[in-house]
Length: 121
Image (cartoon, rainbow, N blue to C red):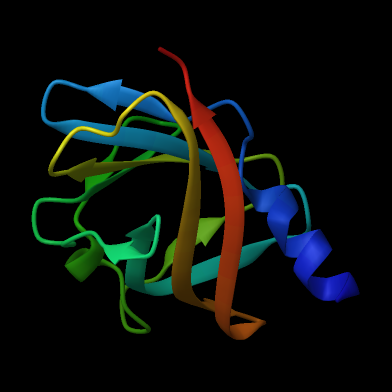
């Protein structure tokens, strides 16, 4: 329970925004230096969002696909760093949404992050 509440600090509340072709949100490392080893799943309101076409945009402007991130090619995620997760798909309606993200990291292993954020209308 404690770890899950700490894990939620990765998600930047208020960052959920509509885009021309889907939506985006931001993650910020507020915990400790880590490496992202892979993204397995993103779901909104219990529905999986396809990861093909998804982008991870680092604070320094690099754009990666989830398939670019693996144990062989990890994404460094130092303390204080941010990255945007951009997903393509049906637009989200304004209002609250449940977001679930499953990913692998070093040193934590497989993790699941469940948060709620509100898309402004």
